[in-house]
Image (cartoon, rainbow, N blue to C red; front, top):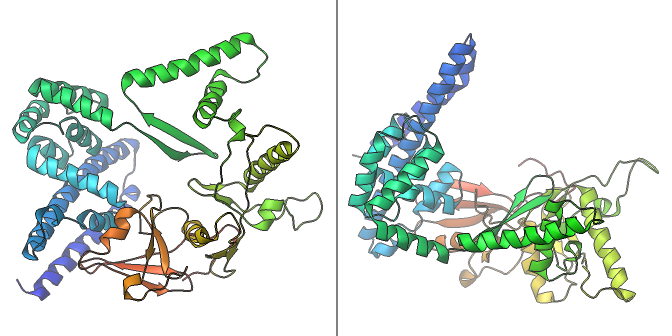
Length: 450
């Protein structure tokens, strides 16, 4: 098949998908009663499952083709699929790690769980249910997995996710009890702690622990809270006491509000000072959202409250207060008034040699600059490589996760700065697709459209 035929085929597929999207947008206008709307909802749910199955199949085909091409280039087998999840993630608007999980799921369904895959393709089960089956059978060998798959095929249609999980887990244990025990042992090695943003300036700190440790930790917090509530006079609820006690015991601070830390709180001067442009007593000005590095936007008043509490604690410390009180450090950040991009920062704060690293981290919002990747910044990357004469300057730097930095070393990948003014970085993948990224605008700025 020549190159022109390949292009024609791709244009045909893209055109068909565009036509489907247009038709979907028109469907709500074609229904005239509630019964038809319910039928439409059910049909769309089946379509979602079928689309997921098709995506999985295409992912596997793409990975197989890339692997064969890399082998032909002399790559070792362990490196033959490097860069595949990154390209899938860019196409599906997901992070590389999420795309890698998708690809693993796709390979399991298409190769080892054919009955489950057929149910997904026909819309008999949801993508969520299929994912549960993949996860619950991941420790089995291919033949055992197919046996469980066959048993499940007639029982998972028309039941809820919890029932699907229970059936899959039971059959997997029965297929290989020893492997189930080994899996439980391995899982204990994966214990970890994580944090993610929650609404209304809150966060969720979670810990994946062995069951007996998790139960014991919660019980200890509960006993402590119950004792304080029983004593009376505290004023906090049981849940508030448990949350405060968790912070105090983890940080070693005397109180939950007195955590000493330097946080990246990016805000305008009017947000910091609470200035207003509408006269005394007005609320104009100072209302721009501040940016808390590692969390995201927070209200200006909340940012001012964080600063005030830290300043009050610091004054208490200077007057002989608790030496473990919190402290707040302020760092000036300078933004371009047109683009809203952070372009420089005040180097005064402990180590001058760290000011450039902090500038890049603040400018890029603390997360990887690769499109759709929300991983925290681990590497500070030269866009034009240092080994090729690239300077170590803010314009030539970007924050990336580890895999985002390593992947650009693979054949066929290029990274270039296409607009220094707005710091627009273009990534070109081995298939020739191009994706751009921009740093988030700093608080209080209104960047012009590109």
